[in-house]
Image 1 (spheres, helix red, strand yellow):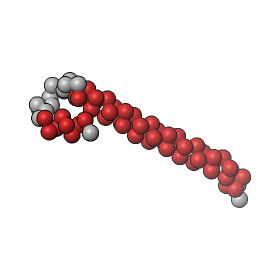
Image 2 (cartoon, rainbow, N blue to C red; image 1 turned 180 degrees about the vertical axis):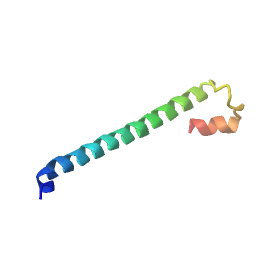
Image 3 (cartoon, rainbow, N blue to C red; image 1 turned 30 degrees about the vertical axis):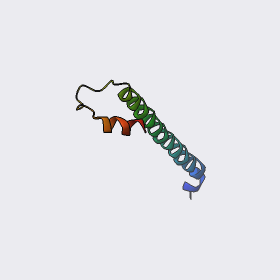
Length: 65
């Protein structure tokens, strides 16, 4: 069978695709955590989004934890 001759290329292609997709997923997950911490830091400083409702003292205490 001729497909067996191409098996290393096919397996390598799938492996490379899995590595790239895994790296992208990890990158997005890490960036999400970094951005969430940055937003929490800004909110603790008192800088809030214009569309966000006013924060209560209980919400501020929860954000600090």
